[in-house]
Image (cartoon, rainbow, N blue to C red; front, side, top):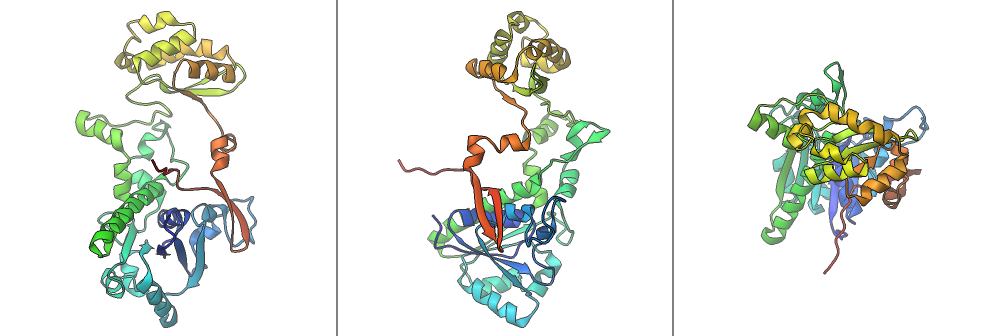
Length: 355
């Protein structure tokens, strides 16, 4: 789809490399330039204890560096800088994530790059909106933008999201910006500078929790899997066979269907549970009411009944179970990176079909 596009990537860790991988999956030629002095992208060394310590890549690195040509360079040297400049002169997209203070040292100043190639789309990831020289990692952004304060079971048991979600959000934001800049270039012929900060990307991801505070003054609390606005939504129950399910009931009709499925038709008419507002207010009592009939059924049987009744619910799966689904298996890519066989889930989940 993008086979004529040349993308140069100097970014490391997750957000920037994820953008490069998105373009690689769409057929672009992506050349990743890694810092030779540092031994390459730092995530090459981010290995689990069970991984081969001698492997040139880690599972983490492999997750966002599929489909690229990898070159080790030192952009502080004349030789490598000249080779870099030659690449930039013919490139369509450059993806970077350096600190502002390092731009001159690496030859990555915006003005210099524009002079080398006025048609270049330069996509840049930075950490904080107004602190260009402050190093930023996902867990710090999760903390400072409110995620950790509302993740976990209570104030004494906070948790971080188990993936670098802020990086993922920033990657999608940057990809969208670069695609729009490419579309603009197709009519104007001019390049562009596209920038996203992890901080601002994280803030966009607060969506309804942000509006809950901006409009209602509600400060989100850590409530585990529960939803502050809906019930029963996020409640987890254990079935007769030990399997667990989670409910996502978002309407009164769905709640009545749930009650009918569980043989609790009368519960849907009780004043304490008749509306979503009341169910949120009395969610703990509601969970206790639902727990017993759910515990009497095996998970597969219950989920089949709920699906037939059009009640939103799902199994609580471990990651190995999730990756065993037909959809997940169809998304697994296998490739060799630096001589090492790797497996990963592809980054682009959309499909485009002609009419």
